[in-house]
Image 1: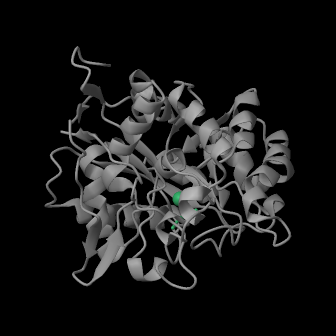
Image 2: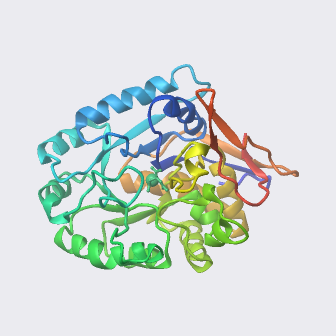
Length: 354
Ligand code: NCD
Ligand code: ZN
């Protein structure tokens, strides 16, 4: 809702429906940052080794909660766990996970699609029994929607996935609830809009803010390298329209994915943008540019909860627009020696959470 003051916006406390918190020292450094603004997050399971079983998820959740102990966050933060689907995932373990209330989804990574996806699924038919069970249980499947074949151009991998993998998968499992993660193309937006049921999509902060020109024109910027890769401007525009229209099928999954500067600023850099610290400033900027500030709350705080069948958060946060650009830390220190670059929005930001 908009206050009477046009420079203030009070919204239901947001949820981040796609977040990488990592483990160890990185976890300790980044978890309190998401907890500052977000009430809950869907936690990605692509650790090394991955979070595969209910037991793994319970243990990882404990580590996340421990990492938050003593942090300044005034309110509670709920990590909503996911299981990393493999060809040997046991449907019975998935059923126990669904009943546990700590696991909210199962994540499908095509093998080799992205960071730490080497244990992912090669043969999708091999996971049919698990998907059937999930459909019965109503447990959603989150999908990294890209094919991985060398012969498919990296910019086409999402569109080809929709046609060759997702569409047949949905036909085989019509009752399975699916969330297409980090949609990056107009084809993805159209595909979700055209589905009769059981399909929604998350959109990241960075895909709304920038396109491949910012990554590649005038010099290569490794901190903008992420997967799925940034596409051309017309795709960014389709994502902006989907996100800012209060369309119930689209909601925020930041895909905040911290990597140390040394692993990104190198000859073969890792994929991922660390957007957790300034996501809400970026999103308010995008929604204001699109003339859609009143729809920010649907995208960040309502549509995702509704899609996952969760109660909406009862607390609120307040955003305020300053007359000068808001400053923020450009880097986060991890365990003293390593640094993680915070996402550079490429334009001055005026909104901040107060
Ligand atoms: C993610 C990571 O680093 O874990 N990277 C990314 O570019 N988004 C993996 C992923 O979500 O694809
Ligand atoms: Zn991700």
